Image 1 (cartoon, rainbow over the protein chains, first blue to last red):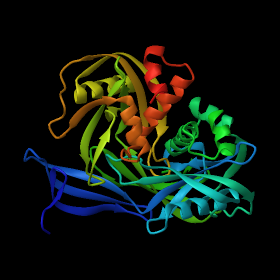
Image 2 (tube, helix red, strand yellow; image 1 turned 180 degrees about the vertical axis):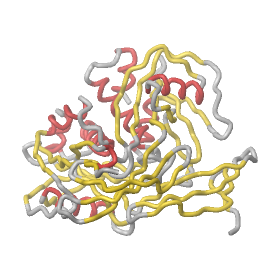
Image 3 (cartoon, chains in turn green, blue; image 1 turned 135 degrees about the vertical axis):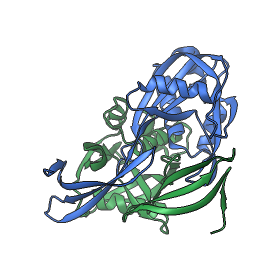
Image 4 (cartoon, helix red, strand yellow; image 1 turned 180 degrees about the horizontal axis):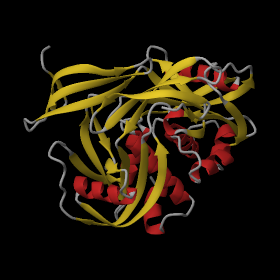
Length: 197
Length: 197
C-alpha cells in the first residue's frame, strides 16, 4: 500500500485490531512530523448516534432508563440509539423515539452534530428536538430492558445539573435546545418550557 | 472464572481483544435476560478526559487547533487532554491548560462530569472553568502539532452554534458555563461575559 497522509502524520499501514457488529478498531503504524515512528489506534463506529429531545404541550419530556454495560451502572437518558450510516439522521432519530417510547412526532428540528470523543473515535451524534407528539405503541428491541418515564422538562434540567444524569448526549441536546429557545429559534409554545427549565 | 452479573446480563468470560497505551477493548460473552447468548465489546480508556474553559478579564478564551487523526480533519477545541486515573481531575485539567497554552489559573470551578459514549466506552470527562489567569510558558508534547488562539467568548459561542466546532467536550463546557452564569453560580466579573456569549 502506498503511504498516505493524515494531517501531519504519514500512515505506513493499517490493520484491523478488533471488530464486532458495532465497532472496528484500526491500528496504524505512523510517522510523526518530527520523523519519529509511532502507532495510532482508532475506534470506528458502524453506526451514527441519533437522539431526540421530545417536548409535549404540557412541557414534559421522556427519559429512557437502562443499565449501561460499559459503566456497570443504571443510566437515565433521552431516547437515543444507533442509525445506519446511509440513513438520514432525523429518520433514524424519530424511529428510535418511536421504538423506545411509542411517541410519534409531527415536527423535528436539528439541535446539533457532535463528535463525542475525537481523539480516539470517529463517533458522530445528531440530536433533534421533536414536538407535535402523539402516543403510539413502543417496540423496544428484545435484548433491551428499558424503563420509560415522562417528566417535566425542569426536572430533567435539575437532574442534569445535580450530576445524577451523566450521559453527555442527553446534556448536549438539552443545553442546545435551551440556547436555541433563548435566541428565539424555536416555536414559542415549545420555547417557553425550555427558557424556564 | 465464576460468572458475574452486570445489570441484567450474566458475564461468562471476558478477554482483551485489543490494547494500546490509551485504550483496551474487552470482549465478553454474555447471557441476555431472556436466556439468549450474546457478546459485548467495551472500550476502556487508560485516562480520564480533562478540559478547561479559561476566561480572562476581557472576556476572551483560548482555543487549541490540531488535526484529529480519527476524523482526518482539523479541529479547534478548548484545551483538553488525558489525566491519570489516580490524579484529581482539576489538577490534570490545569496542567493540560498550562502545557498547551502557557496559562496559569488562580481559580477553577467544576463545570460537569460526563460519560461521553456510554453504550460502548467507559470514557469519563471532567470540565472546569478557570479564571484569574496569567501567562506562563507553554510546553506542548513534541508529538503534538498545536496552534493556539485567544478569541472573544462570543466568537467561541458563534463557532459552536454555526456547527464549525463539533467537539462535544468543548460544547459541553461552554453551554454548562453559560447555564451556571445565568443561575448566578459564577463570580459576576466572569459571568457577565458568559451571559452575553
